[in-house]
Image (cartoon, rainbow, N blue to C red; front, side):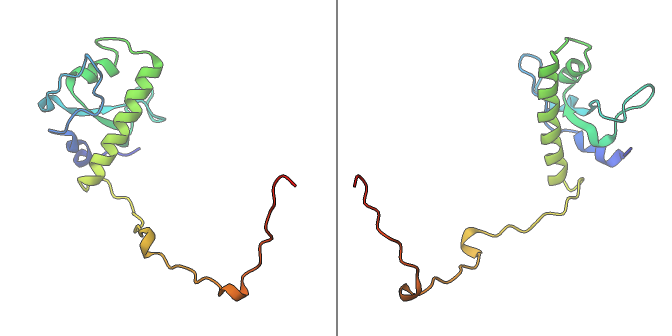
Length: 130
């Protein structure tokens, strides 16, 4: 299980990643790291710090079932979207390090030279309807 105060501090002042319509207060000053359920959560155990989502106080209450009860499908949707956005935010802030492949554009890739016309295979012509 991963614990990191520095990683959790990445939520301070960040926008809410849940953004539950009709619930989200849009007040970034109330954003906290919201732990969502993972394989580590259980009796007396909090989820890993990698399983946190930037959430405003209102969305945090909704996701924890303190203000409303979301359907399982809605809970999963907001949890997954929020986790993806939070991981991206942590990566961009340098709090999450991922080895990234260098992308090459289509124009940067080597092009295999074509055979001269004289050495290309002849394609028989097709006559349709005969």
